[in-house]
Length: 212
Ligand code: CO
Image 1 (tube, rainbow, N blue to C red):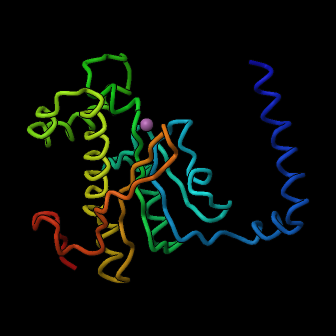
Image 2: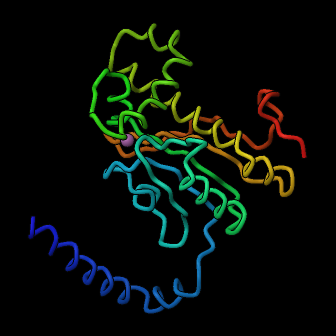
């Protein structure tokens, strides 16, 4: 354990040295501020680091991560990051990126009881299952079913974003952001665009449309 701990600090020193060698102004440029155009909501899973899998640099992607990339309307942490991204950073794109092999999805599909707060968090995924249970129950292979729930969960989180006053207000006033749903495949490193991008409220269910 001690070894990994030390390795992280040494890794940081090595990284700084490498960056400065490649680009002497790397840190002084970043110190001036950030102007990312993308807000990323991903899973906390250690295998899905946003910058690394999109080959982007520090400063390019504003990131929020939680278990199974959820957008829960009472989560003031997520809402604050969203508010900052949309209204202060003025991003043009919000991406929900989930991933196959997600432990959160697998746990939600089971009746596993962890005995803590996590059970309540996973319940949000069970709600997505219940919303789509007809389609999901028709899939016999459990691996295929988990994959489909992963995709449906991403799509529902895209819609959850669209239901927020933050996104609707930005659409009304600034005609942005576009909200995207992506899925990352841990087994080959590739991201698939689920092609569920939402750009305005025209296709939203009427009950969710706010009057401005
Ligand atoms: Co995950």
